[in-house]
Length: 94
Image (cartoon, rainbow, N blue to C red; front, top):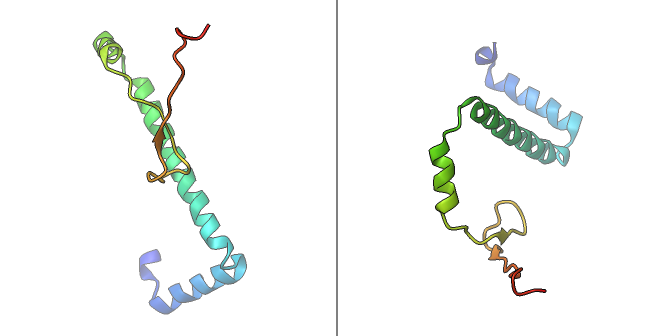
């Protein structure tokens, strides 16, 4: 059905959507739709991962790997303002 739409009909549908929701609301709606899609995708991956059996070997490999420094980001996707976080050494505090 969607493949049978002519360009004029598509423009008419887009014009009705813009009139109903307004030009200011459309970017917000697109952002929230994108966030919802990312959340759904990550949850689907987590569910798929939960179904797989866990091996003891990968857990041992993770224990031996060095821990990367934690970073703080100002905003999602903003890598220019990322910086490492220095955490206090708990053995020297007392």
